[in-house]
Image 1: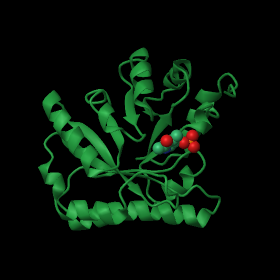
Image 2: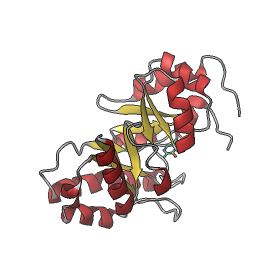
Image 3: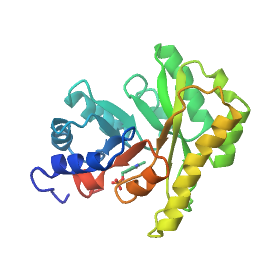
Image 4: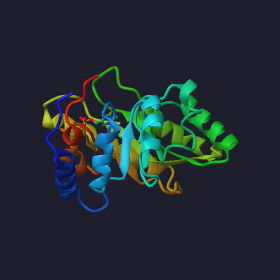
Length: 227
Ligand SMILES: *Cc1c(COP(=O)(O)O)cnc(C)c1O
């Protein structure tokens, strides 16, 4: 891992927060970085952390003060859902109806309400998980959300195509924000469907321009990851 300079993490967090308009929150994506790095971010005032592997989340969270909020942002395998229930503030990456139903039934059993975002796929890459905009709008048109007993859908999450083409990135973010508006047109009675999670280290200013309310930034804060 390229070790960042001392104080780098705190400086980046302060610099990024200055760029965020009111109403836009920062998720510090700490996957593959040690607890000491998260602690430095915490001491700089950061409270929301994003992890993409269940095991890592389980190991790191107890080592940090209790007022942090952890977001799960990776592909969640169904056999690992149970270990997350009640331990995560927001699951940002609900990419199928099957996963959503499972989170719902396990949350109900555990007596908790789990907050989630629906992950929408608009990027060119085949490999990215998520609902297509059409599938997601259709889900809400069928009012499937009314059947949920212990899940609250807070909004949507998405990623832009991995490209240097600024116009393409903007269009992808515009499309993600547009899906949320389409859903609210179809289901205007949806409550608390406010979050649009989009924007990472290289593209978050474009995401904010297009209506992001939650940016997920890793590399810029913690340095490069060594997988
Ligand atoms: C790793 C990751 C990020 C952070 O990406 P950076 O380019 O390091 O800022 C954001 N969102 C998701 C879903 C990720 O997996």
